[in-house]
Length: 268
Image (tube, rainbow, N blue to C red; front, top):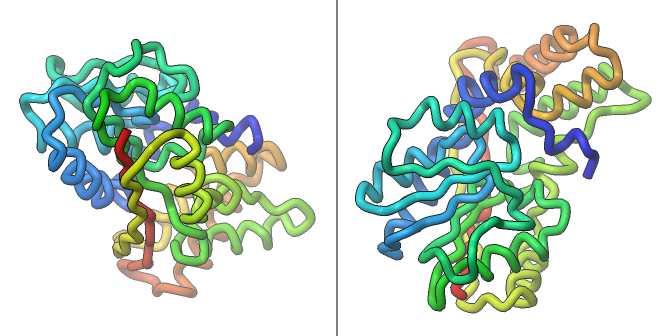
Protein backbone atom coordinates (compact mmCIF):
# COMPACT_ATOMS: atom_id res chain seq x y z
CA UNK A 1 0.00 0.00 0.00
CA UNK A 2 1.31 3.44 -0.93
CA UNK A 3 1.61 5.99 1.87
CA UNK A 4 -0.83 8.33 0.08
CA UNK A 5 -3.51 5.58 0.01
CA UNK A 6 -4.47 6.53 3.58
CA UNK A 7 -4.33 10.30 3.09
CA UNK A 8 -7.79 11.93 3.13
CA UNK A 9 -6.99 15.64 3.31
CA UNK A 10 -7.53 18.93 1.49
CA UNK A 11 -10.79 18.92 -0.47
CA UNK A 12 -11.02 15.11 -0.52
CA UNK A 13 -13.23 14.75 2.61
CA UNK A 14 -15.81 17.28 1.32
CA UNK A 15 -16.10 15.67 -2.14
CA UNK A 16 -16.08 12.20 -0.58
CA UNK A 17 -18.97 13.08 1.71
CA UNK A 18 -20.99 15.02 -0.86
CA UNK A 19 -20.66 12.67 -3.83
CA UNK A 20 -19.13 9.31 -2.94
CA UNK A 21 -21.17 8.58 0.19
CA UNK A 22 -24.56 8.72 -1.58
CA UNK A 23 -23.11 7.03 -4.66
CA UNK A 24 -21.81 3.85 -3.04
CA UNK A 25 -21.71 3.95 0.77
CA UNK A 26 -25.17 4.83 2.12
CA UNK A 27 -26.99 1.60 1.24
CA UNK A 28 -24.22 -0.54 2.71
CA UNK A 29 -24.17 1.63 5.83
CA UNK A 30 -27.85 0.91 6.39
CA UNK A 31 -27.24 -2.80 5.82
CA UNK A 32 -24.33 -2.96 8.26
CA UNK A 33 -26.12 -0.84 10.87
CA UNK A 34 -29.03 -3.26 10.75
CA UNK A 35 -26.72 -6.19 11.41
CA UNK A 36 -25.11 -4.36 14.34
CA UNK A 37 -28.55 -3.50 15.73
CA UNK A 38 -29.55 -7.17 15.65
CA UNK A 39 -26.87 -7.81 18.28
CA UNK A 40 -28.55 -5.25 20.61
CA UNK A 41 -25.28 -3.73 21.84
CA UNK A 42 -25.15 -1.24 24.70
CA UNK A 43 -21.87 0.27 23.49
CA UNK A 44 -20.41 0.17 19.96
CA UNK A 45 -16.98 1.08 18.64
CA UNK A 46 -16.73 2.16 15.02
CA UNK A 47 -13.27 2.18 13.46
CA UNK A 48 -12.35 3.93 10.20
CA UNK A 49 -15.58 5.95 10.45
CA UNK A 50 -14.68 8.30 7.60
CA UNK A 51 -17.24 11.08 7.27
CA UNK A 52 -19.78 9.13 9.29
CA UNK A 53 -22.09 7.30 6.86
CA UNK A 54 -22.23 4.23 9.10
CA UNK A 55 -22.16 6.36 12.25
CA UNK A 56 -25.36 8.14 11.21
CA UNK A 57 -27.01 4.85 10.30
CA UNK A 58 -26.03 3.34 13.65
CA UNK A 59 -27.37 6.34 15.55
CA UNK A 60 -30.69 6.05 13.71
CA UNK A 61 -31.03 2.32 14.44
CA UNK A 62 -29.64 2.42 18.00
CA UNK A 63 -30.81 5.68 19.63
CA UNK A 64 -30.10 4.41 23.15
CA UNK A 65 -26.68 2.94 22.41
CA UNK A 66 -23.41 4.66 23.21
CA UNK A 67 -21.36 4.95 20.01
CA UNK A 68 -17.65 5.73 19.91
CA UNK A 69 -16.63 6.66 16.35
CA UNK A 70 -12.94 6.79 15.41
CA UNK A 71 -10.83 7.40 12.33
CA UNK A 72 -7.13 7.83 11.60
CA UNK A 73 -7.78 11.01 9.59
CA UNK A 74 -8.74 14.02 11.71
CA UNK A 75 -10.30 15.94 8.75
CA UNK A 76 -12.72 13.07 8.18
CA UNK A 77 -13.69 12.98 11.87
CA UNK A 78 -14.25 16.73 11.91
CA UNK A 79 -16.54 16.54 8.88
CA UNK A 80 -18.45 13.60 10.36
CA UNK A 81 -18.96 15.43 13.66
CA UNK A 82 -20.41 18.44 11.85
CA UNK A 83 -23.03 16.20 10.24
CA UNK A 84 -24.27 14.65 13.51
CA UNK A 85 -25.99 16.43 16.43
CA UNK A 86 -23.90 16.36 19.62
CA UNK A 87 -24.72 13.93 22.37
CA UNK A 88 -24.91 10.27 21.44
CA UNK A 89 -21.68 10.01 19.41
CA UNK A 90 -18.21 10.27 20.93
CA UNK A 91 -15.72 11.24 18.20
CA UNK A 92 -12.06 10.39 18.58
CA UNK A 93 -9.05 10.21 16.29
CA UNK A 94 -7.54 6.74 16.66
CA UNK A 95 -5.45 4.19 14.81
CA UNK A 96 -7.35 0.94 14.28
CA UNK A 97 -4.06 -0.94 14.75
CA UNK A 98 -3.47 0.55 18.22
CA UNK A 99 -6.87 1.35 19.70
CA UNK A 100 -6.71 3.58 22.81
CA UNK A 101 -9.31 1.59 24.75
CA UNK A 102 -9.10 -1.03 27.51
CA UNK A 103 -9.64 -4.72 26.85
CA UNK A 104 -13.26 -5.90 26.62
CA UNK A 105 -14.78 -2.40 26.41
CA UNK A 106 -17.40 -2.86 23.66
CA UNK A 107 -20.32 -5.11 22.78
CA UNK A 108 -19.71 -4.65 19.06
CA UNK A 109 -17.00 -3.31 16.76
CA UNK A 110 -18.07 -2.12 13.32
CA UNK A 111 -16.06 -0.98 10.33
CA UNK A 112 -17.49 0.30 7.04
CA UNK A 113 -15.03 -0.18 4.14
CA UNK A 114 -12.01 0.52 6.32
CA UNK A 115 -10.23 -2.82 6.76
CA UNK A 116 -8.78 -2.55 3.24
CA UNK A 117 -6.75 0.45 4.43
CA UNK A 118 -5.15 -1.32 7.42
CA UNK A 119 -1.41 -1.69 6.70
CA UNK A 120 -1.45 -4.77 8.96
CA UNK A 121 -4.86 -6.40 8.69
CA UNK A 122 -4.00 -9.16 11.16
CA UNK A 123 -3.22 -6.52 13.78
CA UNK A 124 -6.44 -4.65 12.99
CA UNK A 125 -8.48 -7.79 13.56
CA UNK A 126 -6.60 -8.61 16.77
CA UNK A 127 -7.23 -5.11 18.11
CA UNK A 128 -10.95 -5.42 17.32
CA UNK A 129 -11.07 -8.70 19.25
CA UNK A 130 -9.09 -7.26 22.16
CA UNK A 131 -11.57 -4.46 22.82
CA UNK A 132 -14.62 -6.69 22.41
CA UNK A 133 -16.39 -8.21 25.37
CA UNK A 134 -16.78 -11.99 25.45
CA UNK A 135 -19.42 -12.93 22.90
CA UNK A 136 -19.20 -9.53 21.23
CA UNK A 137 -19.59 -9.14 17.46
CA UNK A 138 -17.12 -7.81 14.93
CA UNK A 139 -18.97 -6.67 11.80
CA UNK A 140 -17.35 -5.08 8.77
CA UNK A 141 -17.60 -4.86 5.03
CA UNK A 142 -15.07 -4.66 2.21
CA UNK A 143 -15.43 -4.14 -1.52
CA UNK A 144 -15.32 -7.14 -3.82
CA UNK A 145 -12.84 -7.19 -6.72
CA UNK A 146 -12.88 -4.11 -8.94
CA UNK A 147 -14.43 -5.95 -11.90
CA UNK A 148 -17.59 -6.37 -9.78
CA UNK A 149 -17.77 -2.61 -9.15
CA UNK A 150 -18.40 -1.03 -12.51
CA UNK A 151 -17.87 2.70 -11.95
CA UNK A 152 -14.54 2.14 -10.18
CA UNK A 153 -13.44 -0.29 -12.89
CA UNK A 154 -14.39 2.09 -15.70
CA UNK A 155 -12.61 5.06 -14.13
CA UNK A 156 -9.47 3.02 -13.46
CA UNK A 157 -9.32 1.84 -17.08
CA UNK A 158 -9.87 5.41 -18.32
CA UNK A 159 -6.99 6.78 -16.25
CA UNK A 160 -4.67 4.19 -17.78
CA UNK A 161 -5.15 6.03 -21.09
CA UNK A 162 -4.21 9.35 -19.47
CA UNK A 163 -1.06 7.98 -17.82
CA UNK A 164 -0.22 4.92 -19.97
CA UNK A 165 3.33 4.54 -18.67
CA UNK A 166 2.39 4.75 -14.99
CA UNK A 167 -1.37 4.21 -14.57
CA UNK A 168 -2.87 5.12 -11.17
CA UNK A 169 -3.97 1.88 -9.52
CA UNK A 170 -5.23 3.08 -6.14
CA UNK A 171 -8.78 1.79 -6.63
CA UNK A 172 -7.73 -1.73 -7.62
CA UNK A 173 -4.84 -1.85 -5.15
CA UNK A 174 -6.55 -0.68 -1.97
CA UNK A 175 -10.37 -0.25 -1.90
CA UNK A 176 -10.77 -3.36 -4.10
CA UNK A 177 -7.65 -5.17 -2.98
CA UNK A 178 -8.97 -7.14 0.01
CA UNK A 179 -11.68 -9.38 -1.41
CA UNK A 180 -10.40 -12.92 -0.86
CA UNK A 181 -13.10 -14.42 1.38
CA UNK A 182 -11.01 -17.47 2.27
CA UNK A 183 -8.07 -15.27 3.28
CA UNK A 184 -10.29 -13.01 5.40
CA UNK A 185 -11.76 -16.05 7.14
CA UNK A 186 -8.28 -17.47 7.89
CA UNK A 187 -7.09 -14.13 9.26
CA UNK A 188 -10.10 -13.83 11.55
CA UNK A 189 -9.65 -17.39 12.79
CA UNK A 190 -5.98 -16.67 13.48
CA UNK A 191 -7.02 -13.59 15.46
CA UNK A 192 -9.24 -15.80 17.65
CA UNK A 193 -12.69 -15.16 16.19
CA UNK A 194 -15.45 -17.78 15.80
CA UNK A 195 -18.81 -18.05 14.02
CA UNK A 196 -17.40 -16.28 10.95
CA UNK A 197 -19.70 -15.56 8.01
CA UNK A 198 -18.85 -13.85 4.72
CA UNK A 199 -21.76 -12.74 2.53
CA UNK A 200 -21.66 -11.09 -0.89
CA UNK A 201 -24.16 -8.22 -1.10
CA UNK A 202 -25.02 -6.68 -4.47
CA UNK A 203 -26.34 -3.16 -4.98
CA UNK A 204 -26.84 -0.72 -7.85
CA UNK A 205 -25.04 2.64 -7.74
CA UNK A 206 -26.93 5.54 -9.34
CA UNK A 207 -25.90 9.05 -10.36
CA UNK A 208 -27.62 11.88 -12.23
CA UNK A 209 -24.79 12.14 -14.76
CA UNK A 210 -21.54 10.38 -15.77
CA UNK A 211 -19.54 13.25 -14.29
CA UNK A 212 -20.71 12.46 -10.73
CA UNK A 213 -18.89 9.11 -10.39
CA UNK A 214 -15.89 10.55 -12.25
CA UNK A 215 -15.50 13.46 -9.82
CA UNK A 216 -16.31 11.30 -6.79
CA UNK A 217 -13.65 8.72 -7.59
CA UNK A 218 -10.96 10.95 -9.13
CA UNK A 219 -11.23 13.82 -6.66
CA UNK A 220 -12.98 12.42 -3.57
CA UNK A 221 -10.58 9.56 -2.81
CA UNK A 222 -6.80 9.20 -2.43
CA UNK A 223 -6.78 8.42 -6.16
CA UNK A 224 -6.50 12.20 -6.43
CA UNK A 225 -3.13 12.01 -4.67
CA UNK A 226 -1.93 9.53 -7.28
CA UNK A 227 -3.11 11.68 -10.18
CA UNK A 228 -1.55 14.84 -8.79
CA UNK A 229 1.71 13.03 -8.03
CA UNK A 230 1.99 12.31 -11.75
CA UNK A 231 0.93 15.78 -12.90
CA UNK A 232 -1.16 18.15 -10.73
CA UNK A 233 -2.14 20.15 -13.81
CA UNK A 234 -3.92 17.14 -15.31
CA UNK A 235 -6.49 16.46 -12.57
CA UNK A 236 -9.35 18.02 -14.53
CA UNK A 237 -8.27 16.31 -17.73
CA UNK A 238 -8.17 12.96 -15.94
CA UNK A 239 -11.60 13.57 -14.42
CA UNK A 240 -13.05 14.50 -17.79
CA UNK A 241 -11.56 11.43 -19.45
CA UNK A 242 -13.11 9.30 -16.69
CA UNK A 243 -16.51 10.97 -17.21
CA UNK A 244 -16.32 10.29 -20.95
CA UNK A 245 -15.57 6.62 -20.27
CA UNK A 246 -18.53 6.33 -17.88
CA UNK A 247 -20.78 7.96 -20.51
CA UNK A 248 -19.63 5.55 -23.21
CA UNK A 249 -20.37 2.54 -21.02
CA UNK A 250 -23.53 3.67 -19.22
CA UNK A 251 -25.03 6.54 -21.24
CA UNK A 252 -25.04 10.33 -21.27
CA UNK A 253 -27.90 10.92 -18.80
CA UNK A 254 -28.57 9.31 -15.44
CA UNK A 255 -26.28 6.31 -14.99
CA UNK A 256 -26.39 3.04 -13.06
CA UNK A 257 -23.51 0.72 -12.23
CA UNK A 258 -23.29 -2.59 -10.42
CA UNK A 259 -21.46 -2.67 -7.07
CA UNK A 260 -20.69 -5.60 -4.78
CA UNK A 261 -19.33 -5.84 -1.25
CA UNK A 262 -18.53 -8.63 1.16
CA UNK A 263 -20.12 -8.34 4.60
CA UNK A 264 -18.31 -10.18 7.37
CA UNK A 265 -19.50 -11.10 10.85
CA UNK A 266 -17.46 -12.79 13.57
CA UNK A 267 -17.85 -13.50 17.29
CA UNK A 268 -15.24 -13.07 20.02
